[in-house]
Length: 279
Image 1 (cartoon, one colour):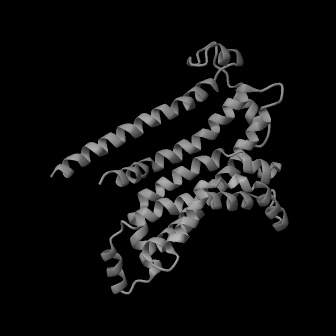
Image 2 (cartoon, one colour; image 1 turned 180 degrees about the vertical axis):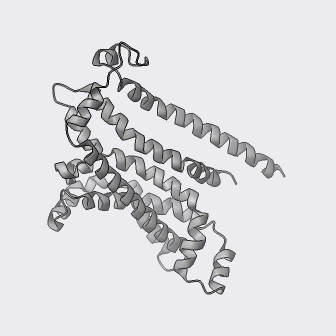
Image 3 (cartoon, rainbow, N blue to C red; image 1 turned 180 degrees about the horizontal axis):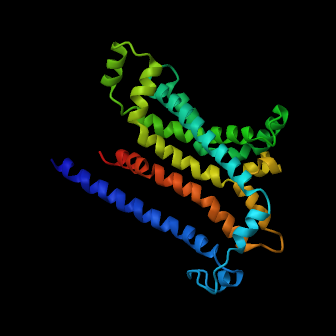
């Protein structure tokens, strides 16, 4: 009885904490957006003020659309992000299902091995990764970024999803086996729909670092045809002069897709977070 009374309170508290964190996290985004519609003088004079008749300007967006192929950069970022999330969720869920469902010698060691990627940053191996991409002819291709980001996101995906996979009822899976369902059918039709909130959580945690990353696009795909949005925005940042109107406008346009995807996944994200906290 007490447990039943505590659960709604814990759920409400989790929602309040998440909403508060979201508001705090969105404040810098709000500042970037309002300053992208201002003149250069207004940006430095009143950075927190809303644009008015005197300070309003679209010079930043005009510069972004004229210099460089912004839509190509946007397309490259979208392809890399969506493809990476697909592979991370697919392979991560399959590995997590195998670790959670099947008991075999070395199961624990395999789980620890896959979790090592969380503790060891992939950027440590940048030189080796670059040599590998050069030898395979994948430099200046989007495939190079997809492969690296997939390897980067899999450890966290396996770590999170394996915990949720263990919570799926064994009776449900055994009933599917009795009915003659294959293991693949059980995985895709029975298990995945039940862990959908955790999939959304993994997608959000991986989506933002991939979309905003500058390091690997600069190292592996710096060519004009393969530039991502973040790398393409760097053209407006110089050693001595920075076009702040263009930088803020480019960042504003880059933020919108992430915000839209976050809003799409937000409900499942909240369910994924609270389902592990409210027991």
